[in-house]
Image (cartoon, helix red, strand yellow):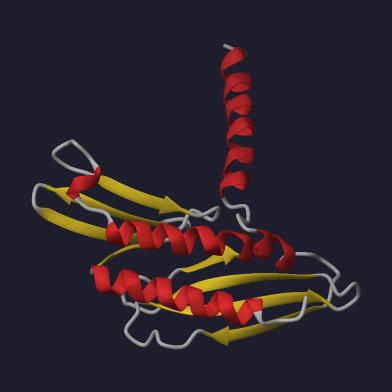
Length: 178
């Protein structure tokens, strides 16, 4: 009988770190932003040409005033009633994400010998885009990487606009002095 309380305490102790890990920042940008005892300067620019998108695409930088170390990222800030999350994409992930979106946009039934297909891309933060078929119906789903992730279904032209906005944000970051 004394084993039961011990076993419950042990299981609770195992569960506590797992909860902490799932809430941990997932990107280098988020980790940099959480540094204690440091004065940070944050710069933000909204990428142009994205008025119809469900997210606002921002190029962002963070600089440590003491050491001049900095990080760059793009934030995707939801602005649809069913998608209000904020996701950060580290600078080093941008080329892969842009290329992945272009590949997903072009994907179709010819890519797989099976009846249905799915193409997907996921970033370090868990932000994901997938295109799947259910018979002749094709759906493109964007899912935030945040806890209790929200999803939004979009059309192919919106996916292309997202790729263009990400490329514009990357160009802003590329133009900055290093």
